[in-house]
Image (cartoon, rainbow, N blue to C red; front, side, top):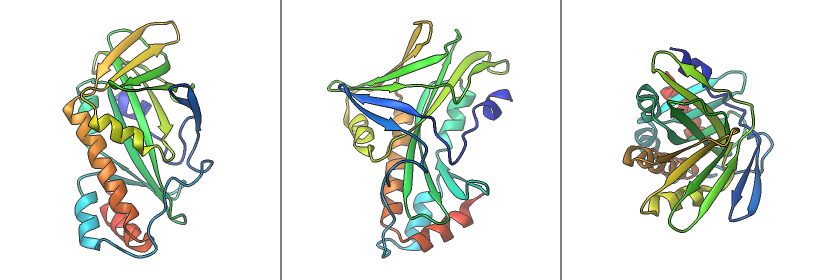
Length: 222
Protein backbone atom coordinates (compact mmCIF):
# COMPACT_ATOMS: atom_id res chain seq x y z
CA UNK A 1 0.00 0.00 0.00
CA UNK A 2 1.54 3.30 -1.08
CA UNK A 3 0.31 5.48 1.77
CA UNK A 4 2.17 3.90 4.66
CA UNK A 5 5.48 4.02 2.82
CA UNK A 6 4.89 7.53 1.50
CA UNK A 7 3.97 8.98 4.88
CA UNK A 8 6.47 7.03 6.96
CA UNK A 9 7.83 9.18 9.78
CA UNK A 10 11.54 9.79 10.22
CA UNK A 11 12.44 9.14 13.84
CA UNK A 12 14.93 11.94 14.38
CA UNK A 13 13.50 14.54 12.01
CA UNK A 14 10.38 16.65 12.19
CA UNK A 15 9.54 19.55 9.97
CA UNK A 16 10.46 23.13 10.71
CA UNK A 17 7.20 24.96 11.28
CA UNK A 18 5.74 27.95 13.07
CA UNK A 19 3.27 27.18 15.83
CA UNK A 20 1.03 30.13 16.68
CA UNK A 21 -1.18 30.45 19.74
CA UNK A 22 -3.22 33.62 19.82
CA UNK A 23 -0.52 35.44 17.86
CA UNK A 24 2.44 34.18 19.91
CA UNK A 25 4.80 32.11 17.78
CA UNK A 26 7.22 29.34 18.67
CA UNK A 27 9.58 27.51 16.33
CA UNK A 28 9.06 23.78 15.94
CA UNK A 29 12.21 22.04 14.74
CA UNK A 30 13.85 18.64 14.90
CA UNK A 31 14.43 17.04 18.32
CA UNK A 32 18.18 17.49 17.99
CA UNK A 33 17.75 21.26 17.75
CA UNK A 34 15.14 22.07 20.37
CA UNK A 35 15.61 22.62 24.11
CA UNK A 36 14.87 19.61 26.27
CA UNK A 37 11.19 18.82 26.41
CA UNK A 38 11.51 16.89 29.64
CA UNK A 39 14.10 14.52 31.03
CA UNK A 40 13.72 11.09 32.53
CA UNK A 41 13.99 10.89 36.31
CA UNK A 42 17.32 10.16 37.96
CA UNK A 43 15.56 7.76 40.29
CA UNK A 44 12.86 5.32 39.30
CA UNK A 45 9.44 6.26 40.71
CA UNK A 46 7.66 3.59 38.69
CA UNK A 47 8.52 -0.08 38.49
CA UNK A 48 9.68 -1.83 35.34
CA UNK A 49 6.41 -3.77 35.41
CA UNK A 50 4.35 -0.57 35.56
CA UNK A 51 6.29 0.99 32.71
CA UNK A 52 6.01 -2.15 30.59
CA UNK A 53 2.26 -2.29 31.20
CA UNK A 54 1.85 1.33 30.12
CA UNK A 55 3.98 1.08 26.99
CA UNK A 56 2.85 -2.34 25.81
CA UNK A 57 -0.28 -0.89 24.16
CA UNK A 58 1.85 1.18 21.78
CA UNK A 59 3.84 0.44 18.66
CA UNK A 60 7.54 0.77 19.53
CA UNK A 61 10.10 0.99 16.73
CA UNK A 62 13.86 1.54 16.78
CA UNK A 63 15.94 3.33 14.18
CA UNK A 64 19.63 2.43 14.21
CA UNK A 65 20.62 5.55 12.28
CA UNK A 66 18.75 7.90 14.63
CA UNK A 67 19.71 5.65 17.57
CA UNK A 68 16.35 6.06 19.21
CA UNK A 69 12.90 4.66 19.84
CA UNK A 70 9.62 6.00 18.53
CA UNK A 71 6.43 5.28 20.46
CA UNK A 72 3.12 5.71 18.68
CA UNK A 73 -0.43 4.45 18.84
CA UNK A 74 -1.69 1.50 16.78
CA UNK A 75 -4.94 3.47 16.43
CA UNK A 76 -3.21 5.57 13.81
CA UNK A 77 -2.83 2.61 11.44
CA UNK A 78 -6.53 1.86 11.87
CA UNK A 79 -7.27 5.50 11.07
CA UNK A 80 -5.14 5.35 7.94
CA UNK A 81 -6.93 2.25 6.72
CA UNK A 82 -10.23 4.16 6.99
CA UNK A 83 -8.78 7.18 5.15
CA UNK A 84 -9.63 9.31 8.18
CA UNK A 85 -7.97 12.59 9.10
CA UNK A 86 -6.14 12.51 12.40
CA UNK A 87 -3.90 14.37 14.86
CA UNK A 88 -1.65 11.85 16.56
CA UNK A 89 1.25 12.53 18.95
CA UNK A 90 4.45 10.47 19.10
CA UNK A 91 7.19 10.06 21.69
CA UNK A 92 10.89 9.75 20.91
CA UNK A 93 13.79 8.74 23.15
CA UNK A 94 17.43 8.23 22.16
CA UNK A 95 20.10 5.91 23.46
CA UNK A 96 22.29 8.62 24.95
CA UNK A 97 19.91 11.42 25.97
CA UNK A 98 17.46 11.27 28.89
CA UNK A 99 15.08 13.66 27.13
CA UNK A 100 11.66 12.44 26.04
CA UNK A 101 10.50 14.34 22.95
CA UNK A 102 6.89 14.67 21.92
CA UNK A 103 5.77 15.43 18.37
CA UNK A 104 2.40 15.76 16.68
CA UNK A 105 1.60 14.26 13.31
CA UNK A 106 -1.30 15.68 11.29
CA UNK A 107 -2.83 13.69 8.44
CA UNK A 108 -5.32 14.99 5.89
CA UNK A 109 -7.57 12.69 3.87
CA UNK A 110 -10.18 13.84 1.40
CA UNK A 111 -11.78 13.54 -1.98
CA UNK A 112 -9.81 16.53 -3.29
CA UNK A 113 -6.07 17.12 -3.44
CA UNK A 114 -4.95 19.45 -0.65
CA UNK A 115 -1.31 20.54 -0.43
CA UNK A 116 -1.26 21.58 3.22
CA UNK A 117 -0.22 25.16 3.93
CA UNK A 118 -1.52 25.38 7.48
CA UNK A 119 -3.67 23.69 10.08
CA UNK A 120 -5.77 25.52 12.66
CA UNK A 121 -6.81 23.56 15.73
CA UNK A 122 -9.67 25.16 17.66
CA UNK A 123 -11.39 24.64 20.98
CA UNK A 124 -14.18 26.77 22.43
CA UNK A 125 -11.53 28.95 24.11
CA UNK A 126 -8.39 29.03 21.95
CA UNK A 127 -6.98 28.37 18.51
CA UNK A 128 -3.58 27.05 17.47
CA UNK A 129 -2.14 27.72 14.02
CA UNK A 130 0.43 25.29 12.62
CA UNK A 131 2.29 26.50 9.50
CA UNK A 132 3.43 23.65 7.28
CA UNK A 133 6.52 23.27 5.11
CA UNK A 134 7.33 20.85 2.31
CA UNK A 135 9.45 18.28 4.15
CA UNK A 136 6.69 15.66 3.88
CA UNK A 137 4.64 15.13 0.77
CA UNK A 138 1.19 13.91 -0.06
CA UNK A 139 -0.50 12.27 -2.99
CA UNK A 140 -3.26 9.95 -4.05
CA UNK A 141 -3.67 6.47 -2.59
CA UNK A 142 -5.36 4.22 -5.17
CA UNK A 143 -6.17 1.52 -2.61
CA UNK A 144 -8.04 3.93 -0.35
CA UNK A 145 -9.23 6.03 -3.28
CA UNK A 146 -8.35 9.17 -1.37
CA UNK A 147 -5.99 12.13 -1.47
CA UNK A 148 -3.76 12.64 1.56
CA UNK A 149 -1.09 14.92 2.98
CA UNK A 150 0.99 14.80 6.15
CA UNK A 151 3.01 17.08 8.45
CA UNK A 152 4.91 16.44 11.67
CA UNK A 153 5.51 19.10 14.33
CA UNK A 154 7.72 19.14 17.41
CA UNK A 155 5.60 20.08 20.43
CA UNK A 156 8.69 20.89 22.51
CA UNK A 157 7.24 21.35 26.01
CA UNK A 158 3.76 22.31 24.82
CA UNK A 159 1.89 19.36 26.30
CA UNK A 160 -0.45 21.90 27.89
CA UNK A 161 -1.98 22.38 24.42
CA UNK A 162 -2.78 18.69 24.21
CA UNK A 163 -4.23 18.66 27.71
CA UNK A 164 -6.47 21.58 26.79
CA UNK A 165 -7.77 19.68 23.78
CA UNK A 166 -8.65 16.74 26.03
CA UNK A 167 -10.58 19.02 28.38
CA UNK A 168 -12.48 20.78 25.58
CA UNK A 169 -16.07 20.02 24.63
CA UNK A 170 -15.05 19.81 20.98
CA UNK A 171 -11.81 20.08 19.02
CA UNK A 172 -11.69 20.80 15.31
CA UNK A 173 -8.79 20.92 12.89
CA UNK A 174 -9.11 22.94 9.69
CA UNK A 175 -6.64 21.92 6.99
CA UNK A 176 -5.93 24.73 4.52
CA UNK A 177 -4.22 24.09 1.19
CA UNK A 178 -1.90 26.35 -0.74
CA UNK A 179 -4.75 27.01 -3.17
CA UNK A 180 -7.03 28.18 -0.35
CA UNK A 181 -9.12 25.01 -0.22
CA UNK A 182 -10.08 23.77 3.24
CA UNK A 183 -11.36 20.74 5.08
CA UNK A 184 -12.54 20.69 8.69
CA UNK A 185 -12.13 17.59 10.83
CA UNK A 186 -13.62 17.15 14.30
CA UNK A 187 -11.38 15.00 16.49
CA UNK A 188 -13.11 11.72 17.28
CA UNK A 189 -13.28 10.03 20.68
CA UNK A 190 -10.68 7.56 19.40
CA UNK A 191 -8.36 10.36 18.32
CA UNK A 192 -8.68 12.08 21.69
CA UNK A 193 -8.07 8.76 23.45
CA UNK A 194 -4.80 8.37 21.54
CA UNK A 195 -3.69 11.79 22.81
CA UNK A 196 -4.72 10.83 26.34
CA UNK A 197 -2.80 7.54 26.14
CA UNK A 198 0.33 9.16 24.75
CA UNK A 199 0.32 11.82 27.47
CA UNK A 200 -0.06 9.09 30.09
CA UNK A 201 2.90 7.26 28.58
CA UNK A 202 4.86 10.52 28.51
CA UNK A 203 4.25 11.14 32.22
CA UNK A 204 5.04 7.53 33.08
CA UNK A 205 8.30 7.64 31.14
CA UNK A 206 9.32 10.85 32.91
CA UNK A 207 8.85 9.09 36.25
CA UNK A 208 11.18 6.31 35.12
CA UNK A 209 14.96 6.33 35.11
CA UNK A 210 16.76 6.09 31.76
CA UNK A 211 18.18 2.59 32.18
CA UNK A 212 14.79 1.07 33.07
CA UNK A 213 13.08 2.89 30.20
CA UNK A 214 15.61 1.63 27.68
CA UNK A 215 15.40 -1.96 28.91
CA UNK A 216 11.61 -1.88 28.50
CA UNK A 217 11.72 -0.19 25.11
CA UNK A 218 14.25 -2.68 23.75
CA UNK A 219 11.98 -5.54 24.79
CA UNK A 220 8.93 -4.00 23.07
CA UNK A 221 10.48 -3.39 19.66
CA UNK A 222 8.83 -5.60 17.03
